[in-house]
Length: 182
Image 1 (cartoon, rainbow, N blue to C red):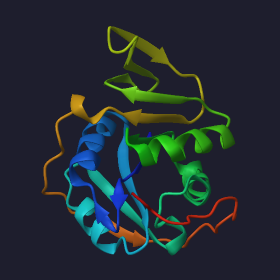
Image 2 (cartoon, rainbow, N blue to C red):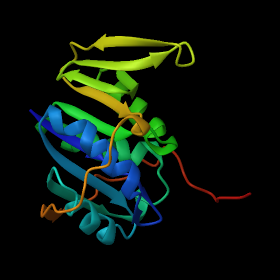
Image 3 (cartoon, one colour):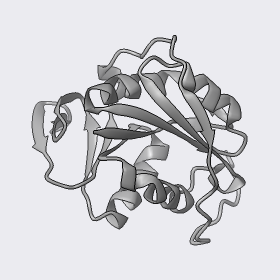
């Protein structure tokens, strides 16, 4: 089994803690390929390649991915999905924006906030504001999960994965980033 892990990349920088913890959660599922999709993400890809447990890093450096819009990133993930049984990401606002669209287009469910991996199809997650733990088993061809990173230790450094630059999948122009404003 193979895993495509969407790295948390903000402003071209890898969020090492969130990504490293997601790598730890994904390792039992198979070989982990990390996808860094952002504008100027070369450094993030190099940092991800150093994480223990990562077998390969894909770097999609394109302005369309720079602001975490769901439509272009989902299209990229879908273009790569054929080689992977699991699509994993840390439970961040960005991933919770992207993965539901990805899941809908792949006709699969999203298993959110996973706190434990039982096997390749069975996961635990909290329900009722964390007062109960639900065991979820998915029969979908693609398992799409977000990982509650607080439940996993960060993968250490020491990896030496290869970094492969990939082309953008294109921008469907369904949404447009206007500005960040506080």
